[in-house]
Length: 190
Image (cartoon, rainbow, N blue to C red; front, side):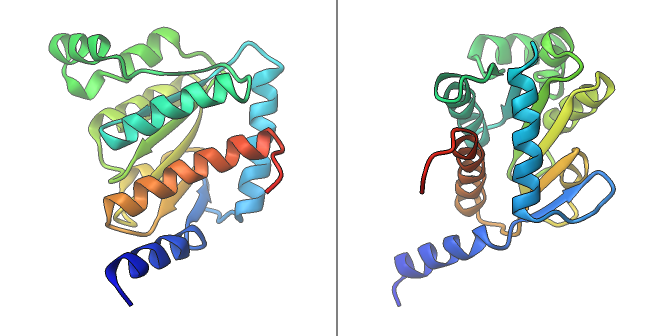
């Protein structure tokens, strides 16, 4: 079996190995997690709240992509804080660890939902933003990978963990989870 075949086989296996935990460390099935998230999204549509996506690097690309897909295709208010001017201004003036915390403090409100994406689960700016969001009463959903002991993995109201140290595997799985939630919301037939 060639590398490409092994790679794609392993990627497929990872979707069944994603671990999902709630705030109390209780394990969730994928069906229960999605059902819970879909209720949260329905509540967003019925209120004036929004989804907020954050991430660095490849996770920033996922965050930007998903914020657009959720509002354009899902008709759900969604934003990401990945504008280059915002990132460079805030990192210059406050430090990079605050580039997501500052806009969450300004634009986030109780009842919003933060989707924090970090392959390592150790990015200080993501952890700082999550802490700030929780203080504001924002619901937090995390997507992380790499180490089972990464701090982000246990920091949200609902936490998706991809058990891999390979960036590509973790990022693709995070993207697929986000798309699957949106497609479930839109009741797309598979």
